[in-house]
Length: 125
Image 1 (cartoon, one colour):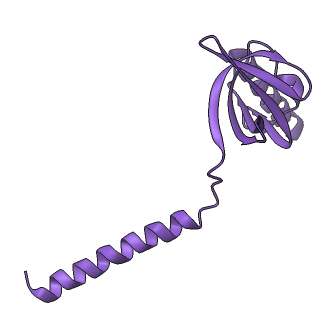
Image 2 (cartoon, rainbow, N blue to C red; image 1 turned 60 degrees about the vertical axis):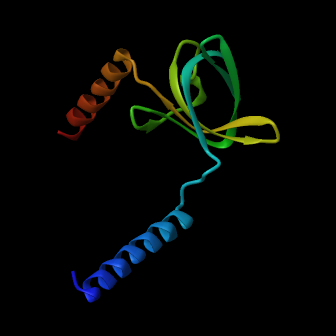
Image 3 (cartoon, rainbow, N blue to C red; image 1 turned 90 degrees about the vertical axis):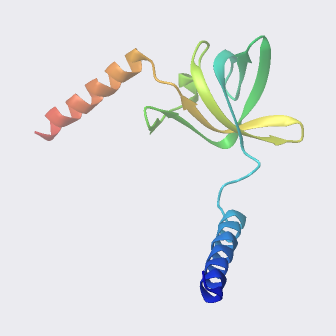
């Protein structure tokens, strides 16, 4: 290979590495957010506990937290004992604040969603 080709390839690799690091530095992803999944063991209006292998993890809902079920927002009433969830959280002052909660749908949730969709189609017709 000629020296010009090697120099060109080296410059191209350097640009890719620089672009990668620049994209990572300006990424909108909050690096402080962590993820945990489990089953809700206890809950009240603003907090809940996840159980995993005899460990209980207590979360407080952030005031701006979003709760999703079947890709739609829902309220705290959907968080009850026995529900499987995926929690995105931040640790602040020794407490875990849930910023996003995704509820794992059950078969009954899917039936309710299908009924909503078919009802909306009938109303539109």
